[in-house]
Length: 194
Image (cartoon, rainbow, N blue to C red; front, side):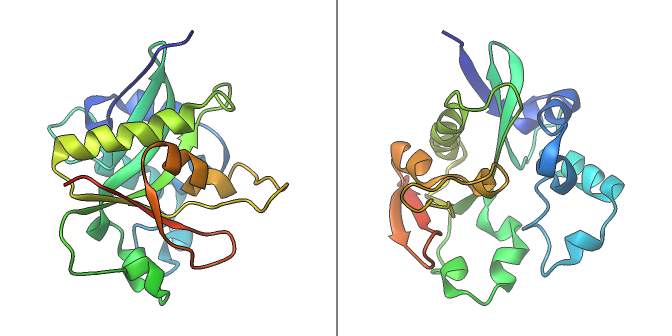
């Protein structure tokens, strides 16, 4: 059975991060979709998004960092973005109140994006990454972890890019609870840490 491990991205290498983001929609976005208000990120170049991610992950530094890298048998295989909610200005610029619940609450960290590298999908890695957010949140002193997953309709599937926000069952298995259901498919989940 493969061994899963994880580490904060600042403790990983730039090459590990690049390997996870080598293809697909994640390669283009680089987890910048919620980093700036409005749609400005679409007007940036690929080089700008690449550079922003390198800066945000802080590889080889004492941090801070913007996510976790998951490894399968020592090979970089996945990513989950997790950092203080205020690091995501686009969450605050949205008009939907479910994206701005209790804005004055301190210690809320957002789990916004999952990436699983081709060749490692459909092996439960997203579940491992979600569980890692809980352990990491406890390490860094987060009080609440908050995610915004999708829940496919009965009998329906989602394409991989739709699942980048996480699937509801993945969060539930990591101990998160649904706190809002703002649309037919979108949920807001939280894991209280203390």
